[in-house]
Image (cartoon, rainbow, N blue to C red; front, top):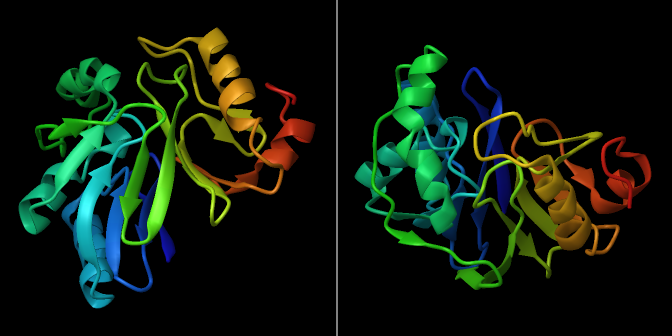
Length: 212
């Protein structure tokens, strides 16, 4: 099971992935901003009898972490990200204030994920790939069995992640896409942090920023 929610004024994609047999689940990048969005996510989890095991972050920009404190409190789960994202998370109160977004609730990270790890939830496995550029500790989560990527804000349909924020690098982003994403088979689906899904093959042929 893979379910997408589009949350917050920034239209961020939050993903729930669950093993259909065990019903164990993980939430990627919970961007639920207000109470109604948080309750919508909880209704889906509870209504499908899902056993939430963890929250995994592709990166820690504020639009991807609004719901972390809520999920930790309601389900007692732990939140994980790459260690290099700590500097981004630490600055989240300042960044949200700049944008006039007052709903951020601080939370603590429970542990760090490294690149080239294999993470599991139920019978599902994800390979972690280090894809900095949009954010210094950005990770992509690759499910080889089902041929998809939870990609965060690295590669979009016809576009790429912004690199005009602090700790971004356009050259690192291009390198990440070419070496870590375009090396995957063309039929792999990319589930991005914003906008609709795409495929590796489509982006290699058509992406105006990074051609394969």
